[in-house]
Length: 161
Image (cartoon, rainbow, N blue to C red; front, side, top):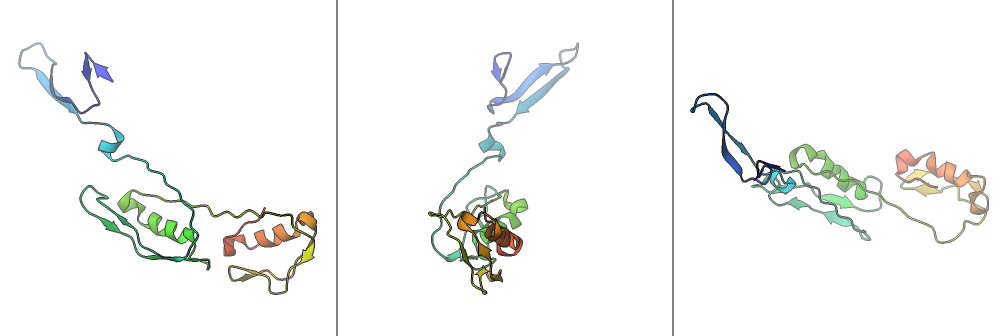
């Protein structure tokens, strides 16, 4: 953006003097700092990866405020309830007001073959939550298996479709 041939938003518009009155000493000086997102702290960086292992994750943000480093609390990542990749996102989001960083996650598994009619065991469990015996048809045509899994999705963190 330019005004009278001068770039306004590049950071070079400094101490510009404008005549605002009828007398020679009636002026005002103005400066506009750089407005690139990297200069005003509004940047967006997205990354993604696939996690195939368990363990303790420790994250650090270098110079999160331009000076200091920020060290997150260690997070255990495993297949147990409350320790999945969502636990890491929760830790990052817990301090988002300090760091300015937010995280989200998606865990997805897709089956490779059709479901054949059958019955789950009496102790059918997902992430420690017992669902029990479910009779289902080929490809779950009656929706019994999907319905049973989704009835406890808030407890297990697993949603079927």
